[in-house]
Structures are given as structure tokens and as C-alpha cells.
Amino acid sequence: MRIRRVAVLLDGGFFLKRLPKVVESRFRETPEAVAETARILCKRHVQRLIGEAEGTTSSRWLDHVYRLFYYDARPYDGIAHHPIANRRIEFAKTEQARFRESLFQELRQKRKFALRLGKVAKEGDWQIPSRLTKTLIKTRELVPILESLMLNGSEGGGLSDLTEEQRRNLEKLIAAWKGFGEDDVSLILRQKGVDMRIGLDIASMTLKKQADTIILVTGDSDFVPAAKLARREGVEFILDPMWQNVNDDLFEHIDGLVSVLRTGNRSDTSEERPDGPQEC
Image (cartoon, rainbow, N blue to C red):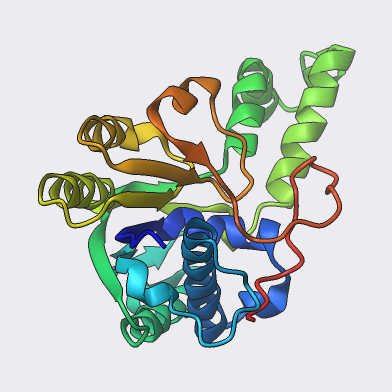
């Protein structure tokens, strides 16, 4: 049997985003469950490559693994004042931040897992959702009428001068603001350094010949330059988009497209859904 040197690279942000679409809640509701799901995804990829059945007892899949990389960003640890709730938010103490830190700790304890952590930086102030932005833009023409109504009261027609379309837009604007809550504003945060670490690790493993097969779990096309380098140097490059559709032009830069979590019936969105990462 061919001895492989396999590296699996998981884009953590993408992985966590896709989990609700591909596994049942019990496989993702705790940091322990998420870490185990990540391990099983890696195991299935390696077993597929070495021709080992999932039900094999005393599996030696880890003997073929160079490293299992998990890329993510440390939770934002800044403090901000919420403009709607009028309260102070310590982001490092939020439920999401605690979940992420617990997940990192669980992964550190998994054999052959290595964490590559970037950071989250604040890039702007609070922003409103796009749905409300569109509503505000569409109702901009109502501003002169509303100003006239404020200055002149009922004199000069006021709301009675509105066309039917303007009246509907005004009703939408009122409904949007009535339904506006504290969850409808968010601080502009961006991950820094995650994609760079993925690209550097692919290049390093390729040039140092530390792996002959690289499996990347992501839906991002930013990896293409690194994938091209790996393939030119003879490394087999496999993409796992976790059943997400990818652009056709990506196929020329990879050696295989494989999603390994089992699929069941088609969902309403035509995405295939696994029945869960069952360990064998």
C-alpha cells in the first residue's frame, strides 16, 4: 500500500458557517462536538485516499497524516457601546467568543491538529443591515414632503399629496423602523492574517516536500495561486467545499473536488445534507 503524507487544511470560519447546512445540531452544538466533527472529516478524507473502509477497527489513518491544520482568528477582545441597547459590550466575554476559545482548546488536544490563528480587527463603526439601507434609499424622495409637513402642519396638503407609490414606500419605512432592534446593528469586524497563513503553509509544505497530498476545506477562491504552486511541484491538491457549489473555473486548479460528510435527501435549497459525522 502506498504510504501517503497527507495534510488537511480547514478554513475555520467557512467550516463553522457550513456546519448548520450539512450536519445535525448535535454534531455542532458544543465546542467538543465541533472539534470531533472536524477530526472525523479529516479522518474520512485520509481513509478515502488510503483505501481504508470507515468501519475498519484499529485504523492507522493518522500514520499517513503530516498535520491537520485549523485556521481561524482569535475573537475580537475590544469594548464598544451598543447604540441601540445603550449598554457596554465586552466582546471577549460574549457567548460566541467563549465558544471559539473553547473550540480552540479542544482542537489543541486532538492528535496532529495544529492551530493557525489570525486576529479580528475593528474596521469601522456600527452599521445597519442592507435591508434597511435599501429602504432608506428608496424613501429618500419623501424627505422634502416630511420636512414640509413638520414645518407647515396640515397646511399645503402634507401627506394627502403623496402618490400611492410614495405612500407604500412610507409605510415600508415605518414598518422597517418599528421592527428595528438591537440585533440589527453590528460592528464592522474583519479577520486578518487567516488567508495569508493558509497560503504560506501550502507553499512551505510544497517546497519542503512535507506532504504529497493537500486537502483544503474552504469555499474561497483566494487559494488558487497557492494551489497552482503545489500542483506544479507534483502535490495532489483536493478541495472540499462541504457540498457548496464552486465556480467552474476552479476545477482547472485542483486535482479533485470531494465532500466527505454523508449526504441524505436534497434540501429546499438544493444543497446535499449529510446525516451526520458518525464515527466508526
